[in-house]
Length: 495
Ligand SMILES: *Cc1c(COP(=O)(O)O)cnc(C)c1O
Figure 1 (cartoon, rainbow, N blue to C red):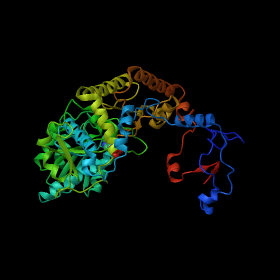
Figure 2 (cartoon, rainbow, N blue to C red):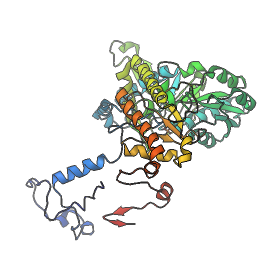
Figure 3 (cartoon, rainbow, N blue to C red):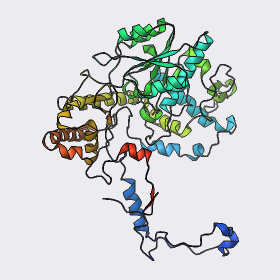
Figure 4 (cartoon, rainbow, N blue to C red):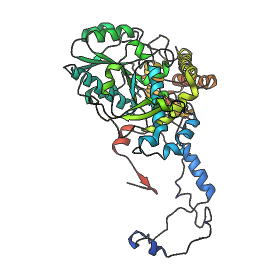
C-alpha cells in the first residue's frame, strides 16, 4: 500500500491538539517578526487530527526495513541488533552537554571512557596503541596507511606499492591511492585464500604494506596468516589488517599475534552501534609500538597521581597529549564521533570478556548453519567452513534467466533485507550472507526456508522472481537513472 502524503490526508477544519490559553501579553505578529518574513497565505497547511499524524508517521517509520523490524543478512556489514541501552547511555546529559573545547579537568569522565575503550580494543586486537579519531572504516584504513607511510619515510623511503588481495573491499585500493600508493592485486587460490606464491612474486623493497582482511571477504580465515605476514616483514613491509570482519575473531585470536602491525575497527559494525545511511561511524586504528609516534593528535593518556591514589576517580588523571612531533596530524575534528564510542563502550562493558568471545562464536555458528543448510540449493564456490559470513553464487540460475539481483529483490517480498550481492568481486553472481550472532535459530530457519522457496520459484515460476519486488510500496527502480536524475516531489508536484 502506498502511504499518502500528509497533505492528502488533510480535511478542512480538522484539528490536532488544542493549544493552551496564552499566559503572556498578546501582541500582533508583525510586532514580533519582520513583515517580510510573515506569510500572507496559510492555506495548504495540512489539517489533520493527532491520531492522523501519529498513524501516518508510524506507518512511514516501518516502510523502510531496519534491524529492529526484521532480519538483515547484509554480508560484510555486520548488521547486528543495537541494544537500546547503548542509546540511553549516549544520551546522558553529561555526555551530550559536553563541549569538546572544555578544559581537560571538566571532561575527565569522557577522557576516561575513550581511554578505557581504546585499552579494551587494544586487548582484543593484541596491539599496543590506538587512535579513535577516524570516523569510518575507510577513514581508519587511510589513517593507518598514512602512519605506515610516515614510518617508511622516517626509515628513508616511503616505498611505492600496497599489495591487496583480489577479494578485498573496494575501500582498500581507494585508501592506498588516496595515500599516494599504487595498489597491486594479489590473487586468491582455489580455496579462496591469498595465494602465497603470487604474494611472493610481488614482494620487493617497494612494498610499503600488505592490506589483508582476515577472515577475508569470502568469510574464510587466512590459515597461513603467520607465514604471509612474515614474508612481508622479511622485505621490510608492514601488514595492515582491514578489521571490518573482527566479529569473527573477538576473544578467539588476536591480530597482533598473527603479525599484524596496524588494523582498524568498525565500531559501527562489530560493536553494535547503528549504521547504514551514512553514519555516524567509528573507525579507530590500533597499532604496534613502532607506529605509535605517528598516531593522530591528540592522544588520550592517563597520568598516575600518587597523592590522590586512594580516591578511585582521581587515581588516574586523563589528559590530551598534543606534543607529538612525528604525528601524521589530525584526521578529524576534536575526538572523532564521541557518542559512537559511548555506545561501543557500553556494549563492551555489558558483554565482558566472555560475552565478547561468545558473540564471535555464535556469529560463526549462525553463518555455518545457513551455509550448510543452503549448500546444494545455491552454489557454494568455496566449501571450507566459514567464519561469520558465507558466500553463495547464483550462476546456476542463469538458465532460467534469473540473476542474483532478482533473488535479492524477491527477499524483499518476504520481509527480509536483501543480502549483499555482487561482492566479493571474485565470485560471479555473489550472494553474501552474514547473519550475526543476534539472530535466533527460529529466525535463521525461517530465512533458510524462504531461500529454499525462492529457489523453487525459480524452477517453477521464474517470472515472479524476475519481477520482484512485487508487494513493496515501490517496485524495481532503475538504480542508475535514480541516481543521475533524482525526481523530487513536493505536494504532488515533481521538480
Ligand atoms: C565495511 C567495510 C569497510 C569500510 O568500512 P566503512 O565504515 O563503510 O568505511 C572496509 N572493508 C570491509 C571488508 C568492510 O566490510
